[in-house]
Image (cartoon, rainbow, N blue to C red; front, side):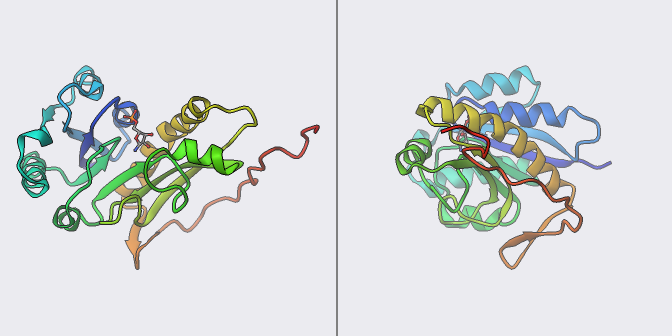
Length: 220
Ligand code: GRF
């Protein structure tokens, strides 16, 4: 099987990167990570990558005079490594439009909400403030507008009555770690593709029970 060559962009902890590295260990998985780039030299995710024997580079945005120049360096480094598919995993920089164009339909991001709801930062705080009962996470193709683009896959997670921001973040993160490897597999294997700004391709998907939150058997 020829595996798709994947690059991962990170800025911090790198737990999603860890989940992707683990998934790539399986011989049947259709992707392999050939490069991890961090824009933050101290990012913990770099250590995870090194522990997983994945090549890393640091490209510090502070070393560049403009966003364009930084994105140029990213693009050149990714191309040198022969990256075919790019995954943002907690990468905290906005890309220039020209970078997004170059990686069009080859570039994924994970966001900790059920998009298009709760785009942007501080999603869990806003979810709690709104009293939403179900939240989750989304893997989508990257477009110039932040946290938008064709949706590959989503996971739904209940919001529990006494959740703190950290409780909710931890529950969503656990779902992220399952969702990102799954979504990357769908894209890397060619099982799904973008058509008219929607992700299509799967024909036979079994029905699942709805996630009801709070559950119906709950005593009030
Ligand atoms: C995740 O919650 C992801 O959805 C968001 O940034 C966070 C990154 O966490 N884009 P990690 O670095 O993968 O642990």
